[in-house]
Length: 202
Length: 251
Image (cartoon, rainbow over all chains, first blue to last red; front, side, top):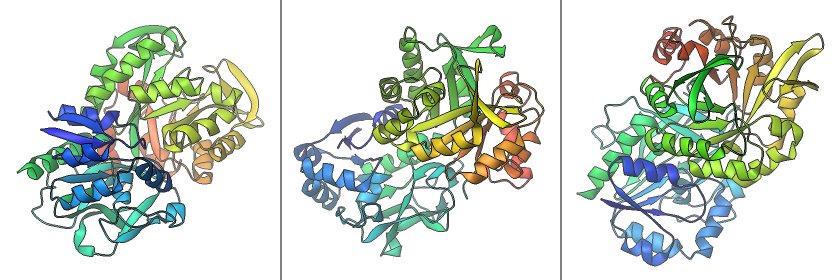
């Protein structure tokens, strides 16, 4: 399967590309609105600051293309900062810039002694019989200081506990998002990524 | 909840894993990628590769190693040893390393930590401290423990954190290779004081060492080399023991 990954200059995409390749998929990086429109399966990664990312999306004029893609019904996966950008605003830049608004709610700071949340934590499924079920031990690798606070609880597929429970996987229709890095989460991460790709394509 | 991490460390010389005691009698211990895969299968949470002969000349070999590891294991790995500049770090991160570890270069030029945190992000920047005990508290050493400095380890750890390091790798030289357990006093002091994760290193010898390092040492992660390389313990055994003792662990 050909998988497109949005490259907007906000992260090193090497690991994600290698993970997709190891799962047997072709991976292409795109950074234009036209490229996004032609994608059949789209990944939206991201590492770094919310404010910087929204300004990059603005500069590259990708916002409308991404929102249109999400509405198209084609599979769309946000990872880490990519997940956060799918929401409204973020405390990270004092709610100054606007995310894509695909999910209602803001991004808020984690309340814990050690920030960022860095390391392996349990991904606790909140929904039965979902595509997320794997044979692997459900621990994923997280590195983040902010979490989403969705207004619609129904989108939460899984939560993780750090300074309280927060959504680690959300989904509505064709749009899915993970707070952790599946490409760094060993066998569990690869299995999850593989399953998302398999179930999305049919 | 967040689990405690177990991190095997592999010493690399010219692209091969080496075993030795305090850099003496180095023996070839195999292909780094094969060993990385083995540790990965054994549930290692992360890996650290320390390039012990790192120099400008062999940077290419190291980069090739990083690429090969990144292609086949999908857990975080860190590369350290002779990292001296932003350019070194950029090359290593682009080749596929998840984090770079700075030691001597940070001591010689603390601003490098801040610059690296700014350019790459704190989460990519690990600062490694080699510390040893004196009558006047713990001090730091550099260049593979060849240069001992009159710099307080606790103060340096604090400074490094303020400069933007994402994580600290605390290697207590006195404990290193002894199998007598991690240095719980200084590890606990630094880990309790800082708002960033601290990886304990030096002294791992038995299963219970991997309990006390978390319970009394308050470390966020434990790194070990000898006990794993010489097959005295497996990562899985360590984790099963941790689980039996009620510690949060990925198994």
